[in-house]
Length: 260
Ligand SMILES: [Fe+2]
Image 1 (cartoon, helix red, strand yellow):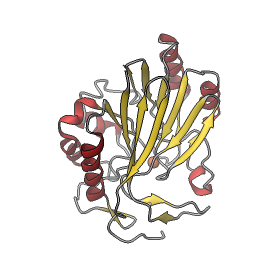
Image 2 (cartoon, protein in one colour):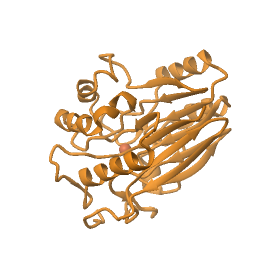
Image 3 (cartoon, rainbow, N blue to C red):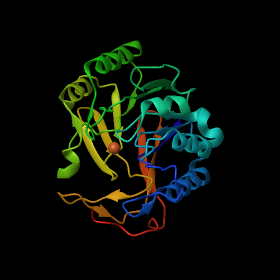
Image 4 (cartoon, rainbow, N blue to C red):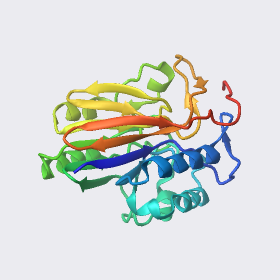
């Protein structure tokens, strides 16, 4: 049985439908990504949104996002990023977040695979953290189903992606999570957002990926920069192994790219 997972990340939406991030209007590119997913991969099993969903973190924006997802919502799972308000996420997506407190994580089994989402949001900070309680929760999830291959999502990548300014706002204290991944060969894939660019790496037996934003893309220079790569998303095909690919809009997002 083959499972198809779609990941979209760093949508940075605004309550204002004309809202712009670094020169790119975020709603039009997001909607174009949704149309492309509908056209190319609409038969996905799950759509995972990996944080930084609302740049303004307002409830109205999350409600607009829920409306845009339409009847896909049953197949959606969400983890937060640094640009997310957990209380407003809970209010907008009560079916996904029935708990009134605690980290916004998820765990689901599909086919032979288990898919887990971590909450790396560190209040008031751009960088992230996965604390000891959540690491214990992850260990417990791994022990429940020790033979299932794991696809693990987390907003902040747990490894350096070799772009200095992005690595400075990465996952604080990633050492413990990296150790757990290295000691857990059933974790086959770790996938993140946050860095608005594609990256491929490795932790122990796990492949590590990051995924383009649905809006503006960050550049590869050591200081803050942007580039003109198109908005995109990632798909995973999960069976005896995993296959993954990034799909991008064919057009460069409308608007100019600012350098600050
Ligand atoms: Fe982020």
